[in-house]
Amino acid sequence: MRLSAPDGAEATVLLHGAHIVSWIPAGDQERLYVSPTAEAVDGKAVRGGIPVCFPQFARRGPLPAHGLVRTRAWQWVEGAERAGSAIGVLRLADDEQTRALWPHRFEVELTLVLSGLRLDVELAVTNTGDTPFEFTAALHSYLLCDDVRRAKLGGLYDVRYLDTVAGAEHRQEIDPFSFAGEIDRIYFDADAPLTLSTAMGRMTIEAEGFPDVVVWNPGPTKAAALPDLPDNDWLRMLCVEAAAIDRPVTLAPGQDWAARQSFEA
Image (cartoon, rainbow, N blue to C red; front, side, top):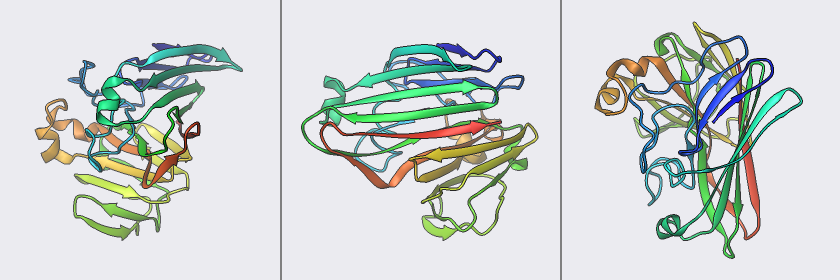
């Protein structure tokens, strides 16, 4: 589905996974990275854009990597224009296949709102069953870079993080910082706005309700091992993900939760 705001801002979202695969701010250029070899087929996640991770982040649990919803068909609920913004809403509910892997009833909703130079993406979860459950979640945002080695990410100074490559915890000592190869970090309780600076310009990244931030790039070696990523395309992307990982969210029956990630070019 393609959304267009009156000022020319555009976004494209797939029903497959509720996967946002394009965001072009008004008068600007593409800001999301999608692999040219990515496929949107049953049971497979799209490499790039903004995948939805729920109810498990990565392989931090017994479920498939990043959970159950990024490879399933969502329903288009609404496309509208309000106060100069384009709005799209998609929804997914549990079924027999999801309950075979995760025995809970739920409904997830993704809402995107765009106008001008801004994109807001909200993830909402409702417990529609009669027993409580807990989950982790993320918006696995792939941001387009001209060359990630020249990019700088700021706003994480003194934030505690887990370096999953080295398997050790640290605190961020350099701000902003740059990238030379593989990086896979979970920053905990990172509540300040972030700035990503590249030759394409400066982008502000904010989150509400997501306490953690994941920063990921596979680097040249792991990129070469990924079948749906060209070997050199690690240079063209950086994942800056809004996430709830360190403290799983618990929902009682009938309870809901919502969090959002916002980008402004």
